Amino acid sequence: MPILILVGRILFSIIFLSAFFGHFKAGTIAYAKQVGLPAASVLVPASGVLAGVGALSVMLGFHARIGAALIALFLIPVTYKMHDFWNAKDPMMAQMHQAMFFKNVSMLGAALLIIAFGSGPLSIAA
Image (cartoon, rainbow, N blue to C red; front, top):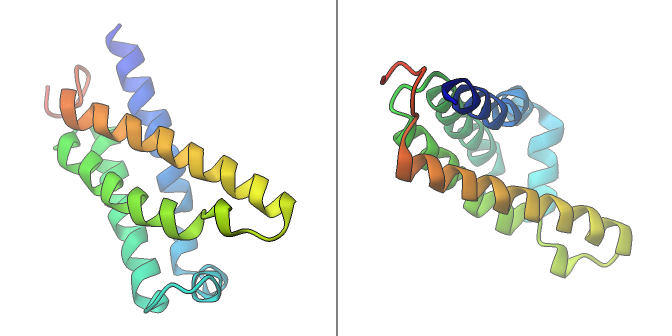
């Protein structure tokens, strides 16, 4: 069972780590500005750092509860602001954003579980 927890932490973290560098790209920042995010040129890179540090923490099992809290702090505003499918005019965009919204909600659930239970075995904390 310990290996399943390690694999779960790694799989959970991969999405945040793979998106890390995108938070510093002009296109990502421009999209955030387009959807009305204020101070996007500051908030988008900052959110990338927040999620990236949180993901590394969870993956390695080093202060994973804090790392999961950082991910939750990232997910809540991003999910609400960037995937507001209820405001989409185009049905295909609404469907895509609805899928992204609920993907983020499920990842928020996983983050809450890590906050509650910690990193488990096969972690730096252990």
